[in-house]
Amino acid sequence: MRYLITSGKGLLGLEFIRQLKNAEVLSLDLPETDVCDLAALMERTVLFRPDVILHCAAWTDVDGCEDDPAKAYHVNSIGTRNVCLAAKEVGASLVYFSTDYVFDGVKNSPYQEYDPPAPLSVYGQTKLAGERIAAELCPKRYVIRTSWLFGLFGRNFVDAILRQAEEGKTISVVADQIGSPTYAKDLVQAVLALLRLPYSAYGTYHFSNSGACSWYDLAVAVIKKAGRRGKVIPVTTEAMRRPAPRPAYSVLSHELLQSLGIVPRPWQEALIDYLEELGFPQDRH
Ligand SMILES: NC(=O)c1ccc[n+]([C@@H]2O[C@H](COP(=O)([O-])OP(=O)(O)OC[C@H]3O[C@@H](n4cnc5c(N)ncnc54)[C@H](OP(=O)(O)O)[C@@H]3O)[C@@H](O)[C@H]2O)c1
Image 1 (cartoon, rainbow, N blue to C red):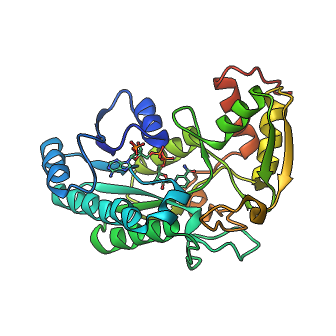
Image 2 (cartoon, rainbow, N blue to C red):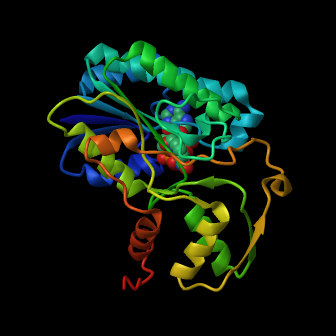
């Protein structure tokens, strides 16, 4: 299998590169390859002729997208269209990563794959547009919605809490948004398991670690399991006054992946594993 990754420099792309170290992989990154540049993307894709395109590139700054919708659509929607056209040209399967932010958060039970999306933010709207473009252009597509990603290779919430605790700061964290953290290592394992099934199971899936918590709960767990002494204060979304609205509840149900035998572990176990990888000793008993 030959894998092309759009942006192997982000959190998820780098985790794919780590786990695909024995496979043939090409990463297309900024500044050489912008997904918004169809001609360059097409040329490199046709030369490499991948079997699978792992489309990890995106503008993931949720508040930035709110402030600059034109750029957000350009990268997340039109960029995705370009990747779809390239995938179609070479007959590759496409894996497009989407987000829990396609949902409005008014539900109070886990969102199923077929629940109607209704994004609140520009970021969510541009990612949903990407889903729709992929559905229109790529019959050989997997859409993987994920949430609250953390991992070794990029800025993420867990690292931010550890850093602030290290600096002895009192940390204010939102307690009224509920979701599911996702360890990038687990997400990549799940996607590779999906791709390695003996049949093609194209479609839209949800993957996060199992269980639900607030950002505040997650911050408290990080500090406790890392053996740090930072003080965490729960605050409301309203008090944080951020430009982009976020869903109050965006827990993802994993029914479709589970039907294929791909079952996520609880977020607490994944967090322990991550902290161990970072060098924080964990007592697993
Ligand atoms: N992180 C999360 O919590 C989360 C949650 C749900 C879904 N997702 C989705 O998961 C996927 C991977 O996210 P991630 O956390 O790995 O994001 P990330 O760390 O921000 O990585 C995204 C990468 O895309 C690159 N990029 C931005 N614009 C580009 C362009 N025009 N052409 C080519 N590359 C470009 C970025 O480069 P620069 O850094 O140089 O801009 C960055 O390396 C995304 O589709 C995201 O929407 C993420």
